Amino acid sequence: MFYRQKHLLAIEGLTPPEIGHLLELADSYVLLNRSGKTQRDLLRGRTLINLFFEDSTRTRTSFELAGKRLGADVINMSVSTSSVNKGETLLDTAATLNAMQCDLLVVRHDQSGAPNLLARKVDASVINAGDGTHEHPTQALLDALTIKRRKGRIEGLTVAICGDVLHSRVARSNIHLLTTLGNRVRVVGPPTLLPAGIADLGVSVFHDMKSGLEGADIVMMLRLQKERMTRGLVPSAREYFRFWGLDAAKLAYANDDALIMHPGPMNRGVEIDSAVADHPTRSLIKEQVEMGVAVRMAVLDTLSRGDGRNDV
Ligand code: CP
Image 1 (cartoon, helix red, strand yellow):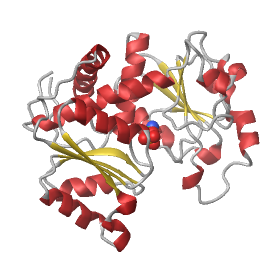
Image 2 (cartoon, rainbow, N blue to C red; image 1 turned 180 degrees about the vertical axis):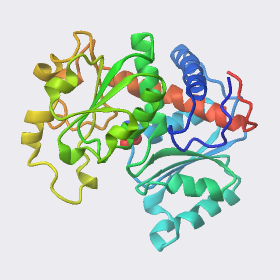
Image 3 (cartoon, rainbow, N blue to C red; image 1 turned 135 degrees about the vertical axis):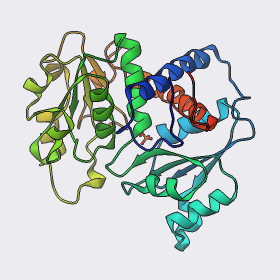
């Protein structure tokens, strides 16, 4: 099986074999990471630059760890202290980094499409680490790996994605990945937080948690993204939690063995109650973080081969 692309900009458009290749390789990196070993020869002499125009804890740190475990030179560019603050444009910033012979450019930006634009202008392989409300492809891959390892498969499952779908790039990437692999995907939330035309992506739409969660194998909660709201879309955090926050009572609507996911960062008491977020057997949230490192190692490994013939 092959992954034939130079960049990873989106899940949309990837084929099942391409996704399968990345998941299979990532699975092998889980074992490597758990053994405490590294593979520092793989990216020796390669440079990875993390270029984050938005805040991040998990994604930026795990790309840094992934790069270092594979032997790359990793630079974390602090946008807040860079010449972006003197008015340098995104493209000029990228051209500057490109001139330093960067091999892998990991980009997070608040504008949808920013990584695609950079990919047309630089020599490096560009990895989308989250762009506006568009996509967050490595998050969907790590979510899929987490599900696959726990459920033993990543097809034929019913996955309920709940909450602020409107502003969620995580939701979009997960919808593309999960439907591509043959899962039943539901989106569950108030009409104000579900994008118009979302059903065209092949999902079922629910406007209450009871019917949305009935029969679900996976309950994936989303953060309420107040920073992207330009007008009041929810009455109050308290009201939101009452109707849409996942607690033990709402989780009981789902299958008895349904698993709980959240990409983080969580707003406890807003979209999720601590008792379910920290559930010792049913919450996958910490495992998602662990899988993030392995998935990013698989992506860096695959793209760094750069010859369009990435055998598993
Ligand atoms: N899930 C996720 O993207 O988290 P960060 O914003 O902390 O990177």
